Every structure is written in C-alpha cells, then in structure tokens.
Image (cartoon, rainbow, N blue to C red; front, side):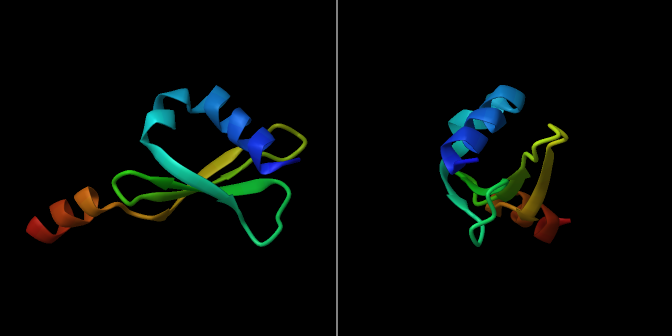
Length: 72
C-alpha cells in the first residue's frame, strides 16, 4: 500500500477531518500506516491493514487541547 492509498482510506473513513490535515508521512517504511499532522498540532497515526480493520490513535495532543488542560 502506498501512503497516498492509505490517505485515501483515511479520507473515506474520517473525511470530516481532511480539512484539518496539514501533511502526512510514512512511519519507518510501514506500508500500512501514516502519520497525520493537524493544524492544531495534534498528530495521529492511521493504520489500514489488508483486513480493513483500521485504527486511528493520537500520538500527540494539539496545542488547543494542551492549553485547556493547563488552565484546569
């Protein structure tokens, strides 16, 4: 799978997040995963294996969320 193909699958599943993505990249030549960088600084890892059971995990929380936590 190419990073472009995986990003296309991300768009199919999480299309409402596409406008917030600033860039994406591969993860250490993992052919099933990409790292997505969002406008607010949040970084996600999206994995789409051949069986179609995708995962989306937060690698780093964005600036807005971190500021809210600091103010609590």
